[in-house]
Length: 270
Image (cartoon, rainbow, N blue to C red):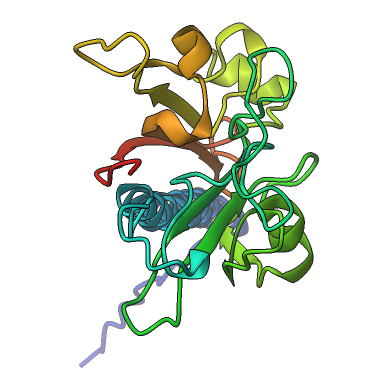
């Protein structure tokens, strides 16, 4: 009896097939990691935009609250101690009274009248009921910087608010990456609507009451003529343009957030 043997050949992958499979695997992994990296960059950018938005929103709300409270307590609450009441809702004026000149210097348009600035505002108000007196609250975006700072100082009757808050005020960073006064060419090209004509955008703009010629609504302060005085400011429009720290991960363009709000002084001048 003869035994028939069968031999089955077992073949593996050839080297070419292995290299092809490895190449496809590497391509798939490369694409996946590229997509993952792009997604992570997009997430970081969106997170920073959201953080910038939240910081700007909180800052805007605080400014509006301070403007709403400006002029409190009003001059009608006159107990003879000037540090216990407000002489002016907005203390930015050469006509601000001091011990040397209690009545203040007359404010003439085109002369010695200084209205609050586009990037600098001093508010006079009582911040907390527990405070011993009225305070000056100053918001300032200095030229060449992108940090809006906030400082407070208790009102001192024998001091000019501008000089005193500059020297004594406890300033602290308030909103970071504010680009209202320092837009780059790239920002202007990417967001032409935010920077009309490529010009800086004021953080603070104002409308004034017109007691010499009463109007149904407050007028833009430069158009208020003789009534263009910090004492007559009724509304403050606040515009914050904040840049995210990193540009867009896809386009490389800067990411900006613009927020606007309006504060309205509710306290009287007298």
